[in-house]
Image 1 (cartoon, one colour):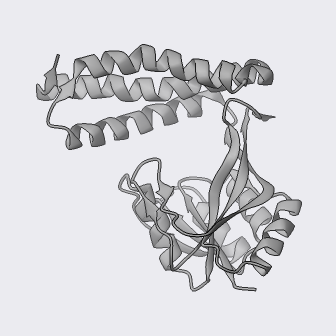
Image 2 (cartoon, rainbow, N blue to C red):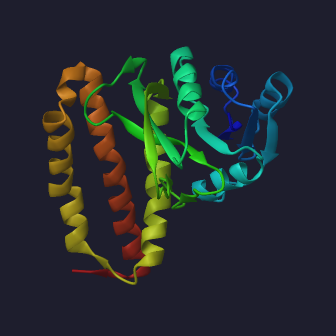
Length: 259
């Protein structure tokens, strides 16, 4: 079977990195950690306890470049990308090995990502879907600096297995992350647009948010996950709202706001 590397980008993940690396180690031939100048023991844990190749590199707001850099440091044919708040169940490791052993023309594989909120799995609201996680190192690259995605073209496959995602164990970090991403996305948007439409901002803050909530909570049945499902849907609306509020603020300051 072709070799596979795990590529993980980190930033002060000393409290969570052990679980992620412990879960992926039985699958991969090497572990590569690209660290955004952590001030805790993230790098030490990865290198000394797991034998990872660790590279300290400033993120500079470009997640795609960070992940591509990590893949470039590997000599393996396959890359499995992960974050420090994710884990691979034992059965998932087995199914990935089976899929790669018989792989022929595939350039990438999807896994199901099972998101959790305060420890509870969110199985509805679009939070439990297939996502790209494994790809050929010589054929696929990440695109977009924020909310990065894989540019997959060619034959692909799906593996009937989960990757467990624990992004938020408390609400404050979740809201702070929304503010950080909102600021970055707003800055990028204003750089790419000479003028900003106030009409567009009103639509995004009002009707677009209502439509998104309806889609997640009712159409995709987020209500079936109880109170955590409701909070999940609301938080996924708050993020875009912060982005558009920041766009409005920046456009007013730069005097690029138009009706």
